[in-house]
Length: 129
Image (cartoon, rainbow, N blue to C red; front, side):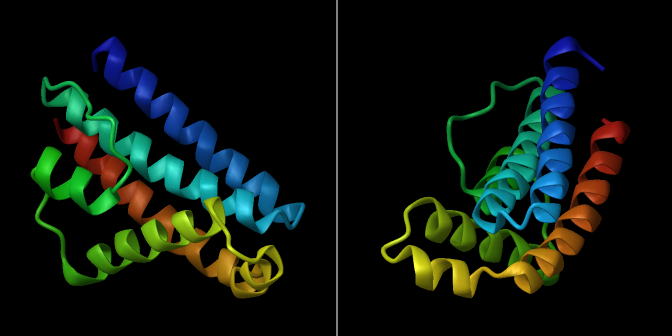
């Protein structure tokens, strides 16, 4: 694995770890930020492993499909779309109280499970490159 790819992977793993720590502290909006960042950065690791420069975009589906050339199954696409929406909603909330109610602890626990499974899948793909 080249240095750039290894760097992206390490940062992605740190974001996933940060999300878990923040979940224990019930900092839900920050949990979503770091879960999104973890998937974004592991996708960028895949991009570098393919010999390309990662684009400065945050859309998970676009990164996976357009940049990594991954054919997404419907359930994986749904996770990416859901997390992209959650990321935007929590990053730029119109009403923080409503946002915190919508993206509550139970929501974060569920999305964490989805991200952990997806992260492992992406890491396995990365290791095959």
